[in-house]
Structure formats: C-alpha cells, structure tokens
Image (cartoon, rainbow over all chains, first blue to last red; front, side, top):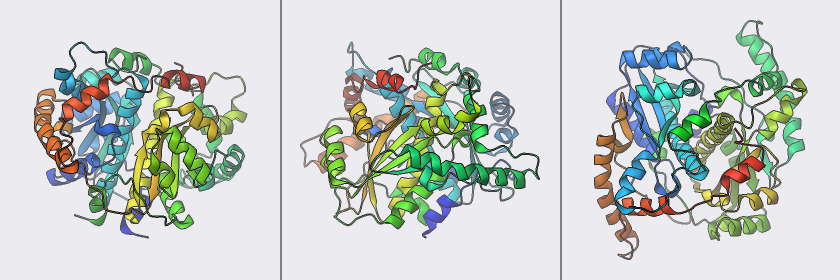
Length: 247
Length: 247
C-alpha cells in the first residue's frame, strides 16, 4: 500500500483541535490541491471562504447547531457552490441570451465541483498531519450563514470544514462492507441489501465500545430516524431565492 | 511537498488507455479508499457499478455522447447517488411514518456523499499509476443509462469514471488563480472577478499550444457558451420520476 492510500484509509473526523494555527503555506497547499480536482467543462463552479476571525467562527458555530469545534478549530473553511463568478465573468458575451445557471443540471455541476475540490483539500490537509471534519450543519440556518459571509446570489454554502492539528487520535467509524456499495455490470439490490445485514452488528459493537454501553442502536434504525426527520426543508426555497434550482 | 500532495497536484484527465486490465486488488483498493471519505450522518448514500463487459461499455459510450474512451478504458465506474439502499434497509422501522428521502436536502446529501467517495477513489487510482476521467456525459441520456444498469428508484447515476493505465502522459489544464476561488472571512466578489481576468490570457495560450493555433477562445467566452446551452434540461423530471428532489 502506498502513502497516499494509507492517508485515505486513515481518515477519521476530528472534532477537537490544538491551538496551533494553520499556516498560510498549509492553507495555500490545501486550496491548490482542491483546485486540481476534476471540474465539469472547466467551470470551476466553487469558492472557499477561509474563516479565521474568532467572532465569525463563534457565530458560525451557533448557526451550525452549537457545534463548539467550529469555533475551536483554528481554520474553518466554508465551501460554496458558485455560479456567481462564472455568470459575472461570462456576462460581457451574453447580452440578452437565455442562460441556464438556474437549471437542476447547473446546480448539480456546481455542487459536485465543490465536493470534488473539498475532498482533495481534505486529503491534502490530512497528508500534512492536520485533521478535518465536514460540517453539514451550516445548512441548518443557511440564509443567515450566507448573509454573515456575504455570499452573493447564484452561490450557496454546501458545507463547512474544520481544519487544525488534532489534539488526540479519534476513533475510526466502520464503513459498510464493500459488497454493499460495489456492484458488477449492473445494480444488484439483493447483494447490496444482504451485505448491509452484518453492518448492523458491526455498528452496534462500535457504538457500545465508544459510549461504554450507553448507545447500541443498529444502523438501520438510526437511518430510519434520519429518513423520518424533516431535515432542512427550507433548502428548496432558499436555493430558488438565490437564483438556483428553478427548473 | 509530500507524496500525497504531489499526486493531487499531478492530476490530469486521461482519455486514452492501454489494454492492461485493472486488477481486482486495484478495484478493491479504489472502492475501499472511496468508502473512507466522509459521509453525512453516516448515510453512505452512494453505490458504484464497476462495468467491464465490453458490450455494456460500448452502449454506455454511445449513451454518453459517443465518447470512445468510455468503451476503450478497461474499467468504467458508474457512481450513483443511492437512497434506495438506506430506504429499503430502514424500512422495517418505518411502517407508516412520513419520510424525507425526496427532499432537496436528501438529494444534496446523496449527491455530495457520492462525489466525496468518488474523489477519494480517483486519488487512490492515480496514486497507483492509473489514470481517470470523470464522465458527466452519462447524464445526457440518464434514463437509458439507468435502465441499462438496472439502477432502482431513489438512486441515479451522478457521473461515470474511466479508469485504466494511461497510454501517454496528457497535458495538464491550468486552473483559475487561487485568489479567484479563495476568500478571507467573507465572500469578496471584486477580488475574485479581478483575479479571473488573467486566466483568460492563460487559457488562450494553453488552447493555442494544445491545438497548434486552431483554438484560442477566452475562458469567459467558453463559459458564456456553456451558460447559454440548454444542457440536460430533462434532469428535474427524471429525478422526480425516480422519487428524488420532489420537495
């Protein structure tokens, strides 16, 4: 196994950081690595906002559902899907033509571009001994987060990312068995669902160990709770208001 | 610079491959690395279909807009956002409760989960000397691709990925200057748009060199053409039909 694959396999979410700042060189390496990810039609439809100001991090921590590590991490990256830049840039060639930045397809291109860049950035950070944690919680109060960071129309914060030196090595959460996600020459529902069964046992054991016996809910049940939660139902209206996902 | 960051910075899309097959060990390493990417609430809402059957690859090449390398690559991965598995798995705990797999938020979770896993997989492949190319073209005729690969309701193919040994070292496309995508403590539109200007010059030079002078369109103009193209406008209806993105 090579060093890169070892880095990928060693990933764990880090939610507790030392005070050590992330250096400008590290930030540049992280973002430059992010930029080298693939991008659909070279649109590069993302921006990243590096937040280091304590008061901003504090407000973002509250807006993300009181996640203290958003404030505690030395660097909080807000990854935005961004069609604003490309629309403004291309504007001089467009005059009165109809454009499609508000289509579902354009929304997907921008969202996927952002995720690919962010994951490269996460890998780069981890390869330098830093820890990261994705924060989907910034979508809880996405309109307030957008206003706080002055994110313009046609752009939206997809997720945040805590970055910093881990203060301890956290545990690694087991993943589904590979047979649950890998299909051959066609989707195989039976194989996939059969492979999931063992995962319930694995996750019960993992939760018990991690919580000293206090938690032992099977994954399937946790997923049922996730599916039944009316989570972030403001998303559609927010995105349409930003000029996205209208058709 | 460490080996992992060197791998990330050396990325280029590969569209021409040797006949050498991707081994089962390589495929397992690629998918396992993909699975170690972060996932929202541990939903792991993706599947990957490894396509090696020549007739299937041929049909996918045609459905993707006659992209010959989809047929030529030894391994074609189809990355699917997948809420089918989790809904079926959780079903026993749900009976008659309302669930939200059809929300915009759930669609985003599944799409982002898929992209994070795929990018880890791409990095793992490249670290072993393989080349990759993302294929958004599988969304051109997404209903036919889904039928061909028997992708169930609540799942959809986000993109394909050619994988194989490169037959030559292809050129590396320059990215936007970092100042165009990296903002500090708030979105800075002036800085971003100013930084884009030099990129038009960079890309004209790159295109001229690559095409021996035949192409020299500035990036801004290519982007205007992209925005004005009514690209994949079937996406919304297709996704709703699959039970996704309904609210």
